[in-house]
Image 1 (cartoon, one colour):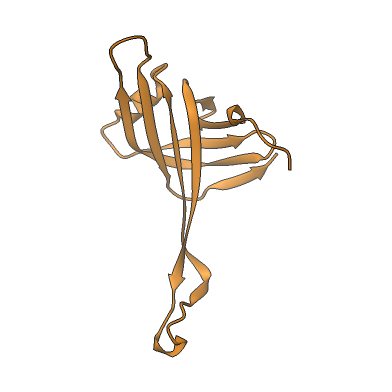
Image 2 (image 1 turned 45 degrees about the vertical axis):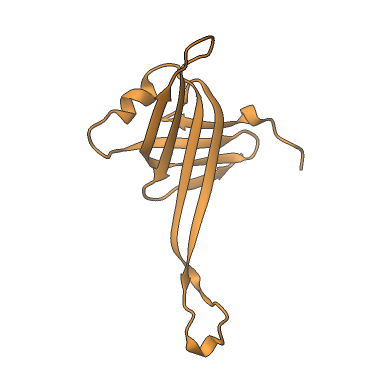
Length: 129
């Protein structure tokens, strides 16, 4: 498989790229169900079915625009339709909760920065490119 440019990996809020993002990441969480008992001679055993499936996304970069900031300031724990796009490979889409948002700035010739984390709520679908 050919290498892929990092700019082809994007977190989107709705259908809009998170503005100013320089780094986007996704983690697929697959928690198994531990079924080990005393008859397994100390060797861990998992059930064939999955215990919990979830996804985490994060992005960070230059603080640009207010869409993400407005969503993060909501006083309730709502979810937002979000997608994680890997151009040429596919798209993950579902509802995600903003679990953290940080804005920072330094004196001098640097832009204001942000970082944000998101956790899935409900089904996440994958559509191949």
